[in-house]
Length: 418
Image (cartoon, rainbow, N blue to C red; front, side):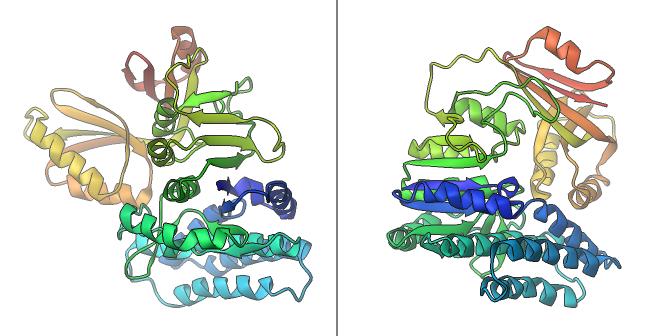
C-alpha cells in the first residue's frame, strides 16, 4: 500500500480537488491512504479566528463567516445543491459555533487545537465526498481516533505503541474496500480532546500511518517540482535535487526547510520507507526521492530562510558566568514554553538564542526569566542557514544586512540578520 499526502495549496480550490481525484484515479490499482491538509490558507484564517475569539474582538464572526463561505463556494463548483456533503460540512463547522458562544476560559493552546483542527476535518469531508462522486470508492477516517497523543496541545507527542496498535487493527480492513481519506495534522488524547501535531504537521501524519502500516512509499504532492535548494519565491535560480539521503533531509528540515515537516523523516527512515516529493500539477514527473544512501554528494548549497525571528540574550543579574546549571534552567524553561531553539551561542556572561516568534509563548517565557536573569531581545529578524556553503555565497546573502549572530561548522553556517 502507499500513502499520499496533499497539502493546502493542492486543494485550495475546486480545480485542485478535481486534480487530486485524477491523480488518485490513476493509482486505484494500489491500496491508497490519502492524507489531506486544510484548504488553501484556511489554517491561517482559523488562527486569526482563534485569536479574535480569545481576545473577544468584534470581527470574530466576520472571520468565521468568510471561512464558511470559502468552503461553500468550492462545494458549489463540485456538487449539486442537494448533495449531503453540504450538511456534513455545516455540522462540522457547528463545533466552532458552539465553542465561540462561550467566553474563553481554557488555555490558549487548548482552544487553538479545538478550533484550528476543523480545517482538516472539513477539507477531508469534501475530498472524500468528491472521490465518491467521481466513482472512486472512498471512506473517511478520523485520524483523531488513530493517532494517540499526550496533552501537549499544538505539539502533541505521539504515543507510538498505542497508535500503531490502533492503526494496524483498524486501517487494513478499510483499505481492502477502497481509498481511505484522513485529515493530516491531528491527533487525539485519552480524554477525546483534539490535539495538533505542530504547524504543517500533515506530512508527519502521513509518515506515522506509513510507518505503522509498513507502506511501500509515501508521496507528498507539492506546488514545486520536488525538493529545491532554496525557496523559489526568494531565489529565482533554484535547483531541484533528484535524490536526497534521509540524513540530509533531516538536516534540511531541522534547520527549517519548509517543503517537509521536521518530524516526517525519522519514522520513515526507521522503517526504510522512501519518501517522494512530486508536483501535483505534473504528476508524471520524477520529483525528488528521499531514501537511505551514503554515496550522494552535494555540490549545490542549500539555503534556508526563516522570517519573524527573535534573538534573545540572557545574562545573570549578579554578573556571574553562565554555568551548566544556568543552561539547564534556561533550556527547561524553553521546553515548558514549547519553544524550539533555531540557533544559539554562549559566552562567559550571556547566552543568546534565536527562535520563531510566537506572541503567547514568548510572553510566557519572558515572565519565567524575569526574576533571575537580565534580558535583551530583538525581533522581526531573519535566520539564514546555508548547508554546503561557499564564502562568496555568504557575502552575497548578507549584502545590505546587519549580522547579529553567526555560527559556522564544517558543513553549515547560520546567520541571524536584520
